[in-house]
Structures are given as structure tokens and as C-alpha cells.
Image (cartoon, rainbow, N blue to C red; front, side, top):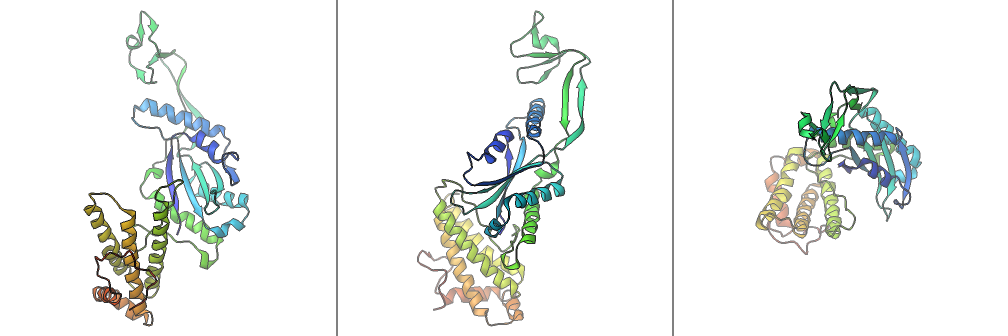
Length: 351
């Protein structure tokens, strides 16, 4: 499954320095840039200037970053060519300047790309606005309407500034931000885009997949550095992989997608939501993993019961007869739907 993380950057120059510095990155293999570094300094400066003028609260977003996990099979490719392939493909598709770095984590278990991109295109010629009268600004850089607000006895108040008539009071090197990158669907769309790029370079057995939100599959989660729940997350990811394999088995054998979504809802979504309600709105990684163990065991038994049947039987059983099939599988493994399952193994067969 493809993993892509999409984030906002409030200090793009510092982030670029961090991902591209060999002293800070133990396993840095390649860096690829579509524009000189000065571009990012100018971009940050203009974004901050526009942000101050807008009077918006919060933090200014100077650029955005995609973290793209690569399959281990891609470690055999030339790092510079691989990174160039991904960056130039993204640049061509979305029309944005980029800088990217190819890394391994410390344990060399996560091969990934940090791709920083601009939401704005650089103008062919700068747009400059000329002051038709003296203009005054407060300490935060906001324009004040009259001289009286900024001066006392003809002298500027502390922190205030003035731009004289005839001088440039506003300059733009970049176009406005492209709203595409703020849309909720962008991250999902870009997952599909990068998955396609990966699959062009991978043999069929190693090809990647994207699981939409409204699907019977479960996305795995990246484990952050020093995460106190790392052990639980590793186990959760393992169980999710087991679940996804069983879902693919049923789907390939003719089970309707809608019925697979129903199974996920009944065996995982509903019990997980109930667990959170019982805990006063707090999630419990251990409890969630127990729910996954139970769900995987039940689905494994459902698949086993149908493993020798034809596609038509799978479609019928996972369609009209789904409730009966699920209940029969639960009875076969001796497990009621709300039973605790701490000792239950996911590879357990029928009793």
C-alpha cells in the first residue's frame, strides 16, 4: 500500500536545509532541485509579507511537503535518477517548482522521499506598486490610513515606518497560491499519481495499491520517531495487512465490494466506535488490536469455508447470504461477537 504524508511548512528555508544536509541526515542518497535556493528565500519572504498584510491570525504557510514512502525494491535503482524521475514527473503534472531529498531512516527500514513544492508560480516580470503619496505602516507591517496614526509632532512612533511618494510599496515575484493544493481530495489524488509512477518501475507481484477511504481495506500507519505506542502500531499494521490480504482474496473470488464494506463495518468500525464510547471518547490501541484480531480470525474462517467454491458461490455468500456466513464463521471458531480475544491467534483454523 502506498503511504504519502502531506504537510504545511512555516519555515521552508529551514526545512530545506534540514532534509538536504548530510550532517543532519545519516542516510541521505540524493538531492534534486528544480530552481536555485534563492527561489525559496524569495518565496518565503513574499508569503510572509502577504500574510502580514492580510491580518490573518495563526502561522503563515510558506510551502508544502510530501513524504513519499518507496517500496524496498526501489533501493536497487540509481538514487539520483530515481529522485529525478519522481520530481520531474510531479513538476510536469502539477506545474510547480520543487526540491526533494531521498533518504533512509536510521534502521534502513523506510526508504522515502521528502518533496517540498511551491503553491505559487514565479512571474515572468515582477509586479511593483508605486506609492502615490507617503504611506505609513504599524510595527506589524500593516498599512495605517493617516499620518496622524503613525506620528507625533511629525516624527514616526517607535516601530512605525514610512514609504515615500514615488517609491515601491509592494512588490510581487509570484502569482497567487493555487487552490488545488488546499482541496481535501488532493492528497488522495496525489497518492494515485505516485502509485502509478511506482508501478511503472515495479514487476507485477511487487506493485503498489491505493485504498480509498470508502473501501473494505485498512491503511497502515507510519511510526514516528520515539512514538511511545510504536509496539502497538507495529502490531496494528501487521493485523491490518492480514485483514487486507483476506479482503483481496474475497474480492478476487467475486465477493461484491459493498458486502466487503459491510463486513468491515460490522467487525471493525462498529466495535471500535463502541470501544471509544465506553472509554469516554478515548481510543485504546490495545483494545483496537483485539478487535482486529477477532475480525481477522472471523474473515479468515469465512474465506476458508468458501476456498473450494467457484466465483458464483463467493458472490452469493458475500452478498445475499452474508449475515449467515459471518455468523456461521463465528460459531465455527467458537467466538461470540463481543468476546475478548487476547489469546486468539489470527492463523487459527476451524475447530
